[in-house]
Length: 543
Image 1 (cartoon, one colour):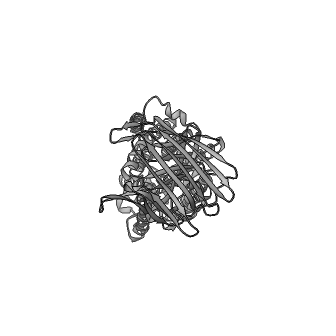
Image 2 (tube, helix red, strand yellow; image 1 turned 90 degrees about the vertical axis):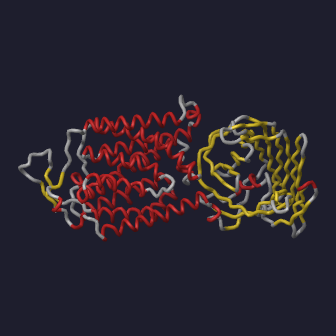
Image 3 (cartoon, one colour; image 1 turned 60 degrees about the vertical axis):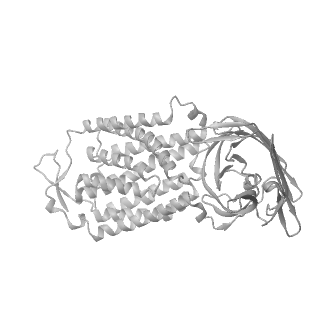
């Protein structure tokens, strides 16, 4: 029990009631973490939006309410559910919206610094109004309410009683940032976390923090919905996103300053005497143990994120497997080829034809000469044309025959496959002479593999090892080019919106070596976009 005196109330009648302890707050934090990593991960894997709502309600909010019940703590008083007025809530909302614009730009900087983006499932991107509404309910309503009740309501209150308001603000903000298990995005979460704690501290109410959280998450959700359903709107923004981020930061800072002015005359509840603090409110092994366990969990999950993002070959341990292609009739795709300046520099047309039990792919490509200069790099190519024909077995999609020819104004090169009942051989004109190389049956070949990957068993985080054949690869030791087979990792890193001349899609992003390809998340997983290094192929039409 703690004797507290509300400094803005008549001092004649002190109020006596239970207060949350640091020990209970830390154990609540750890238990919720464990529930999210186990049950929450399964729920969100089954359905992102419904799973997130279930996670927030049953794995974050429910444990908090159970602790309140077990400790016999009055919810309204403990969580500071007092109404601060519409002005305070409105300023919190504005601060949240402004902080999101700033955080989004900071997130882009951190992704560039770490050289990877966090994984995201396909259903994190709504394709209908109903899905968009459900995503909004998950991210902008359930997440702010449930997380603020646990963090700014219970945990920050416990630390304020045991360590004082300033330490409570710092510790709770750090706990909130680490709770999201983001290594690359940790710095992005910190401004939001401290702003949430600051509003809770200044107003002595939970609702401004809920409003700020709602503003940030609501803006993020609306951005995702627009990027998915109306990507053309983003292309027509009146200013670039960095300018919007600066404007957002100004809005956030002004809102927080006005909030400070609004609450300058209010005094917070203070303990009668620091000497009356109970032992359970101070740091002890009972309080530190759950934090140490939570820190180890964060380091483990952060390490997994880093390995997955920067060293995908470490998770690509299984051999490449492909499903059956889901095409019963001939299909033709047309692609626009664009350089780094998004200028059209060529076209490609590919036809996939079922031939009995097998499939035959034929592609023709025409590329104009171009030079695209960017601030940090230059991309250029000579005018050339190419033709590819390859035949795959229908049961396992392994190549059985094929040839490729590329011709420019002053160069040409080719490769072809020669096969017997048991052997597959690559013949190429490496180093100006014909050279041969025996190939494994599941080998991937230049230009053809990107269409064969339409048969990948697409799942988030899929990692496999593939054998890639180089018709001519420069060898530093011998100072010559020879055909070579190299082992490469194939990773389905995430789903993301993709816009091509053919329309807006949700696509699986697949990375192999220096190349990236995007495939429709819906069967038959059409190749939508392919970054070939020198230029990008973008789907223009399907025949």
